[in-house]
Structure formats: structure tokens, C-alpha cells
Image 1 (tube, rainbow, N blue to C red):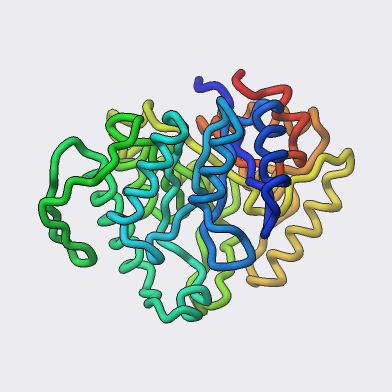
Image 2 (image 1 turned 180 degrees about the vertical axis):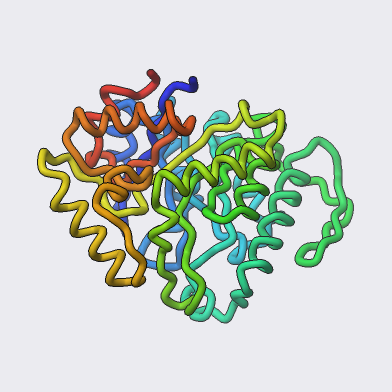
Amino acid sequence: MRPFRFLAAAAPGLCDAATLIETARRAEAMGYSALVLPDHLLDQHAPIPVLATVAAVTERLRIGTFVLNTGLRHPAVLAQDLASLDVLSGGRLEVGIGAGWNRPEHDAIGLPFGPIGARVARLEEAITVLKGCFGDEPFSFAGEHFTITEHDGQPKPLQRPHPPLFVGGGGRRVLSIAARQAQIIGIAPRLLPGDQREPKPDPRSFTAEATAEKIGWIREAAGERFDQLELNTYPSGGPTMITANARPEAERRAAKLRSATGIEITADEVLDSPHVFVGSLDALTDKVIGLRERFGISSIMTGDIDELAPLVERLAGR
């Protein structure tokens, strides 16, 4: 089995440099594998300069995006930023990339936000372009969304053939693309169809049963490369919480999901979900070990560095 890797979020919001540097150095000292940052046009810094700062003040800590929105950037331009980060960090970059889900960001700046099928197609093409830019020779590509003509991306990343790609999702199409193209795959809940301005998670997709189905899709699409893949999960079911009295919190979260969606989910399903980390330190330790034994999940994005610090101390690298 793969050893456990824990990822944490960089200092949230519009923090100052001192806060970011202190967070990065503490994360490295605590045993985290990587510090990551999402990609939104909200009250946060842009990911590329933040990750460059983190790399400059640490020695071992990896840096990553969780995840870049391909709808906001041309992949050939992005490839130059990412390759530069990999070189300047000494080969510590992980590239999380996705199709985008937050329509209001696109609407606010006048960028199109297509239906999910178009966004996933754009994601798949963007991955091809990134890999082409990272390759050793000039390349050309003609797709529905991008056209590249004899372009030789520079600089080349230090990690060859490219930094590890992280692609996550909850639907079969995205997870199949990830299985074929990525090195790290994030298991996420699906969103319910409907108003894209206010997306709602599908409670049925939070469950352990749904996770087993998703991993089956990944295994089928990956074929022989399945054993080379790292599987990741993150606390999309609410903030992590170390507590000796987990059930009332699980009941509250189940009720919230039922109220928002009209779909039944029980407190037991919430507690068993790979996307919920609520319980005592011993219970959460058993849960994380169980996720690896049941599903092969060895990578956990915890959120804030302090939320699961005792668990990271127990399990990181083991």
C-alpha cells in the first residue's frame, strides 16, 4: 500500500506574506506532504505567486493547485507558469486541474460557462496541451477548443515527463479521463443537475457505496496503470472536527443535506463517508487507515493545517 500523504490548504483569504510563510514552514515541520491552493476569482490570492512564495521559504514541502480552472486560462500560457514553478521549486510541483464549477465567477468577467459536457471536453484538451508544452519537442494540436501550431513550450519542467497531474471529479466521464491521463485522482461528490449558479451536492454521491462505484470506473478506464495511481479524498462534507461526540454533528449534517436536496441520507452514512472527517482522534485514525484498506485512498486533503494535525503526526508517511 502507498504511504499516507496529507495535503493542507495554504493560509486562507487575502493573508499577508508573514502569515503565508509561517503557515508554510509549520506545515513542513508538521509532516504535511504538500500545501495547496484553489483557483477562484474570490477573496483569495492567485495560486501561482502564492505557491512560488511557499516554495521559496521551504525545502521539502511540495506545492500544488487544488484545482486550476481550465475555463479561466489558456493551457499553453498556464504551462509556462507551471513549468517555471516546477523549476524554481526544485521539482516540487503537483498540478491539480479541473473543468470549473462556479458559474458566477465566469459571469462576472464575461467568460463563457458552457454545459458540463463542453467544460469536460475543454479540460481533456487542456491536459493534452499541457503535456505537449511539457514535452521535449515542438508540437501541434487541433481541437475544438484549442489550436497549437509547432509550439515548443519553455521552460521545461524539472520533473519528467511532467509534474504529477491531479484530476478529480464525481462523474464517470471525468474520472475516466483522470484514470487515463493523471497520476493523482481526486474522488469527489457529484453535483445535482439544475441551476448552475447555485450548485448542490448529491448526498447519494457522498457515501462509501458511491465511492466504491467511482473507483470501479477508475479501475476500468485505467487498465494496467491502475496500480500506479494515487487516490485522494478531501472533506467536502463539511469541516474536519476532532470530537468525542460525533453523532450529533453527523445528524446535523445529514439533516442539512436532506433539507437542501430532498434526498435521504443517514447519520451513519455521513460518518462512513470518505468525505467527512468527524470523530475522536482514534476513530479518525481508524477511518483513514480503513479508507486505504477498503478503497486504496492514501492521499488526504485536510483543509487548514491545524484541523487534523494530531492525525498527520500519527500517520504521515506510514
